Length: 425
Image 1: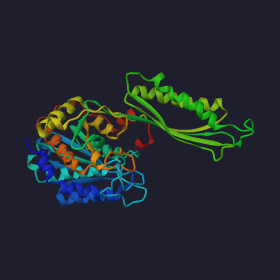
Image 2: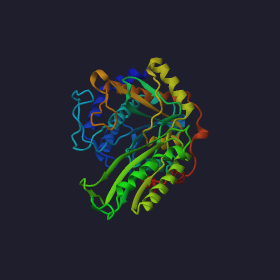
Image 3: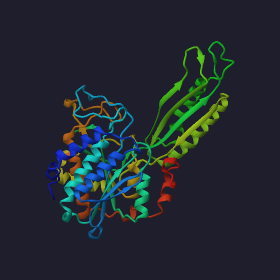
């Protein structure tokens, strides 16, 4: 077996420099033009063939499919609409901060792109050791605009055959230089909702003259909160939260409108469909009961990210042999969501978490937090994991042929979500 960590360490300075460049120049979902351009420039320098898929991202190609199987390695590349703090969770200065006001890589996608470019650079000089083909997928719009649909569409329309997919996410709940490989359940799917309740404004001294959307919301919230227990199995993970409530301008005025939004996080698709059906009813019927009008935007359910068990066991074995038993740590499945759930459903594989926490250095803030930061010394391990999974799978990975999706890609998306972001033109 190759010394993957040593090979990755040779690219460490490059990986960190690319991560910092992406971090300085973040772009939100569907607007990653500079990021895509830089990725393509780097691939050109490496002499790697690629396709820039409009709206979707980049596919790059190493090796030869005639020699064996094909492995897909994935990185997402978009940032978040967040104003970054220049200090981390421990109050210590970060080595790099966003130069774009109100936009920042507070979920680690800069690291993901950099690690995959590091793997590309290392593999570009070892193509004779690739017993098949490796496809690199740099995905736009993971944070909510669903651009992966364009990549999947291109792949199926161009007969891109993939035997397995592999992805990772940096994670501050795991110590630096550690890896978690989920056996099956990894990250949840989502039902999201934004609701506007329309009542009638009045002075607080005359509630009988008005129609309070706040009263309606209180009842609606209690009913929605109970759906998880009534319509989902207690043995399937599901959580509910409301993260936004906006109404009113003064304590003595009954507002005319109230808006709120939240999510259900789910793994079981049948449970999710039942909950969504009841959610729609609760919103409409409660509004009627309180003489309010309502406008609701409900999307999902999206798929939960569920690893292929054989691929996960194979990854664990390969990582133990390559990096040592101590590199692997267990972690419970997560209730956050990931668009890679769709990719792993098409092409069975595994999704891992790369530990980047360093309490001594103050790197403790979770993703989507303004103080989020990365222990950059872990990034070479991420690059090594990409290479290890790909090259070892091409040598003796499990047979996934019966689990690769072979149908029509449009029908695939219809099965799992009616969300407009996944609609085909």
